[in-house]
Amino acid sequence: MQYTSVLDQLSRGGSATSWTFPALPEPADTLETQLPCQDTSTQDLWFAERTDEVEAAKALCASCPLKAECLAGAVERREPWGVWGGEVFVDGAVVARKRGRGRPRKDDPYAPAPSRSRGAA
Image 1 (cartoon, rainbow, N blue to C red):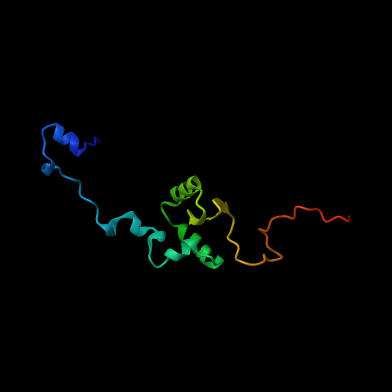
Image 2 (cartoon, rainbow, N blue to C red; image 1 turned 45 degrees about the horizontal axis):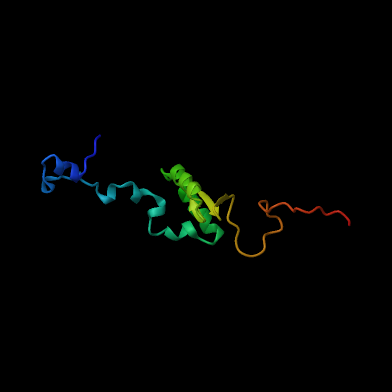
């Protein structure tokens, strides 16, 4: 497929008024209307604070046809936060899950290991 600009058309003796543009697809048939993140009823989920809402956004991403591209773009851009491609980003990095505010649970399997040994001093 070869693309030509209006200026190329004019330099060949054509006129700008005879320039035709390809027809645009109908909005109802576009891929964007089928993406879960484009649904106006779920837009707040992608940047939610509550863990259950973040998990709901990740579940909606599972059926998205652009999941891999979305995740790759978010990693490349180092998105500061939100759900992108079914993964949670915090400070530009993918995290296993978003932890709620406050103190972590004592039995949290995702909590970092203590860095100091607990030996007697």
